[in-house]
Length: 284
Ligand code: PYL
Image (cartoon, rainbow, N blue to C red):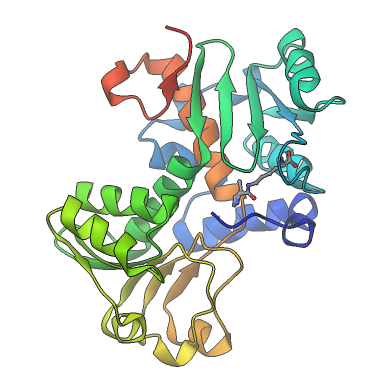
């Protein structure tokens, strides 16, 4: 997954409310309602104001991304959950969060970004949540995916989760990746998935696209009326692509954060059996 940069996240806190309105305009739901829809729970069943979130900056690996924790806090706050960034980082930050009245603790290193629910001992994951968010956005924008074909660009962790979810929607997927063996691996794993080598032809051939890659996509390849859901960072599309597409759903962080927030809460709400759980039980 591409590592975000300070530049990519710097405007999120100041722009989060217009992102919320933008989502409402495009998909008919604000961030909170969209995330509940994606997780198949009713927003009325969650008292968001009764929760508190703590975001712990993590210095491991490539270190802290300036503005990342504040951006996560801004997205969670937009959903009606009081949020703050811990003073301390790493383990000291986790103990600060545990000793505070925070119910959900967010933390991200270079490999994983999780939301740990202190009340239930379960956690949700950003990769799964981002894929869930962008497949759901595609489904809403298209009015359903059943019986349709989606081109998934990028067979990384988000793209792979997205392929699984597209299959669960009774659709089929063409997958392409700069490393052909990654697309072929998905083809051999899932019936209904086809690995495609010629990405340019694939983009020309497909009206439904989920772009989970960091590459630029020339607008001249995009079909008129294409419906595109694009978690990939950096943003892939030029003016021509925006003109030709019916809709392009993209944001840098908030959609995945919103879904992972509801995913971490919904376990405490419905006590979902472990087998169906979207997150993993950390404390049996
Ligand atoms: C979660 C984002 C979405 C896209 N790429 C993922 C990424 O950049 N992961 C690294 C996050 C590092 C955060 C850093 C901090 O500021 O706490 N450890």
